[in-house]
Image (tube, rainbow, N blue to C red; front, side, top):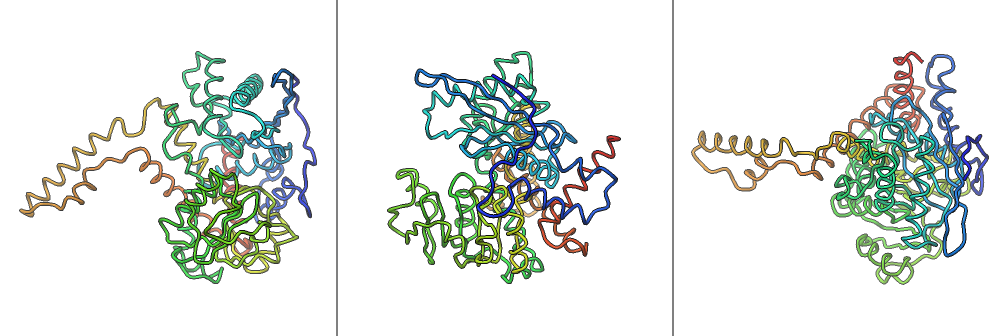
Length: 482
């Protein structure tokens, strides 16, 4: 095993244009240009504080394989730092650094008191069985913990692309075995199964946050008019790229709860198109059974999924990988609103083109913050060592019953049963999580739109979101005396 602090690498590049990391830097620089920061602050908040690279062997099918992984810490203005761990064959250091930076800005935007971090393991998880993945994950955890890059008080991972609650449970168990005297050990990672000190609603959180963010945007007529659309999500035609955890939940909630029409679904092996609307749940089940879209009977199949990014629609939700809309296809995008459910799906150059076309972008640093918001709720639950509602649920029910009794006594008639249920009910964990998430997304959007509408030098919602984040981070450093 080797563990080294390594300098930034150029990493992978898009088919055209700058790398993901440089794209994030360019968007950062655009926002910084609108601010009057103290000397040196702009540079401090731009680059990662530290990056760990590890290489470790694991015996697989009788022979040793060496795996490479990274964990980047962008900013420690708040501790612990927070960010997911992704498993993918394309993982490189500059991608991890870019994602860590976005996590710092994301946490600041939604007022989650964490710094930003991110991790990645260069692996195709589809090539390994469950027992092999467990051994790999536990060894990766040991490497991170040995260098101080995982800890409930310093650095807290979560699921990302290629990982899930299963991997988080393995990480938590490994950390507890390494540090049995740490009373908060279970808080070393979030996104765990609900039965393993996780929190109900974490799996849906990022997709649910996308829904809440879109709802809030479409509730503001002045904002919606910038896109040429009308307020409200009902009847809006939506194309979703990626029906993984985030894309599936976002599309499902928008369809079932907001009456949006899902006219396109893009996946690895192609895309489905149906102007009358595609049943998201049906497609999700089909993918689970057939490992792809091909052959789905109730929509038109298009083998070149990227073409469907250019389909005429009201809302395009890229919920897959970064760098999906570039200089090569930006001019052909017909959506009026792009809702960035993935991290970095639009490159800096493409962003410039889209803005010139009057397309409104709800930026990733805001829109997909639902995951880290609910991760914060889980972390709080873990370090407080008590489940939500344990102390006050019964008290809420008793108070509700007293209110109903008082109303009936004054009116001389019975309160309808459905109102009694609402008055007397105490919030379960899922209700509390959704309520907290919705409030967080609404408050954050109000801050972003205020910056956008009141500052003449802020041209779009992405720049506004960066401005909100950078001012909060800079204030934190100044108050710390740094």
